[in-house]
Amino acid sequence: MSFLFTNARIVDGREPERGAPVEVLVEGEVIREVAPKISAPSAEVIDLKGRTLMPGLIDAHVHTIACLADLGANAKLPDSLVAVRAMKLMGEMVMRGFTTVRDVGGADHGLKVAAAESALPAPRLVISGKALSQTGGHCDFRGPYDDRETIRTGFRLGALGRVADGVPEMRRAAREEIKAGAQFIKIMANGGVASPTDPIHFLGFSREELLAVVEEARNAGTYVSAHLYTDEGIRRAVECGVHSLEHCNLIQSETAKFAATQGAIAVPTLVTYDKLSSEGAAMGFPAGSVAKIDSVRLAGMESISIMRDAGLPMAYGSDLLGEMHRHQSEEFVIRGRVMPAHEVIASATAVAARLLRMEGKIGTVAAGAFADLIVVDGDPLADLSLLTRQGAHMPLIMQGGTVLKHTSLN
Image (cartoon, rainbow, N blue to C red; front, side, top):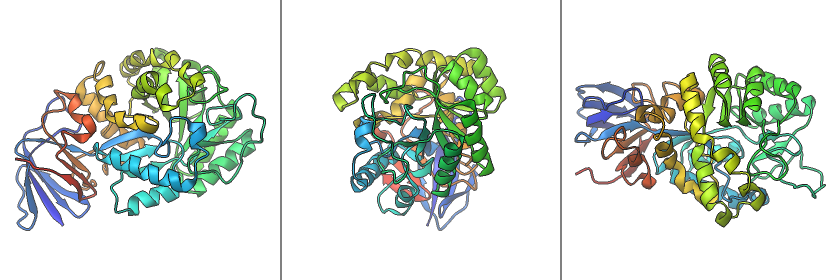
């Protein structure tokens, strides 16, 4: 089936103002042509009447299996329950305009295939498989008094990650995740908020382990993404070849500049700390984890300015858990307090597409790209909140040429 969008004003993050009205022809699952005037007599015409047309949004840091805020408890749930809840979470994501998401710990290849094949709406899913953590690291939820042996195989779908210690285990874990369908490797290279025995300043893995996992990823033609907060942790990870820098709340200027020269991309996730601080306890987030939040939350806004000034590209990320997923789009507004609106939008379009190694296919309204498109009532460059409110200002959402939502455009 083909569609011809007319009177469309494109916003994709490249320019600070909306483009002049154009026409966009969709054939099958791709965009065939973008031009001032297109002849397509057999296409269904959708007159946008000057509304904004955007590429589908990309969230580069989600955990689709995190249906509970307590990740330790989430890991104990049966796979069947987690799968159904994950499909519900993903359906809500795509109805906010996120047509592609990158899962950085938890989702497996089976869930990716299910999302692609299901009649239920779901984003395109890019996965790391299980994140890798050292003993006592950010995916070890056993606590200080739990001396049970950690699981080394047969991981439940609800588990965010797996434990690996030493170079041989790191290599094997990375190879197993890639064999199982991981498109990149995620590691926990700093302490974390959600886990019980690793203060934020903890450094995860030895340099030898980091170098080994980076080599394994490169051997497979992909890259390593790392959970990071501290300036020391970030610097060390970049020196070892880590490409995708998650969170980065405590980064300093010189490290940000160094990361930029190495071609790294950061993925800040400010909204999750804001919501964990205000809602986490009520949602079942462990008390010890709530106490850690402010150590990273309060530095978040400054980190955005530091990275922007250093020229370090930033992709969009939310990193929400459980019922807090409903705040996914509010990262736009938070970043908009310190960044120009078009740069915030670029983080969820062009920059994220580059990080996912899908440039030209997603994050753009251009010939040859997937027909992932959202229509917005109003100008998000003037008001980023139009991208929030659960898609209330998005009368049309299309993914791969399939219309998922279409309300009146009168």
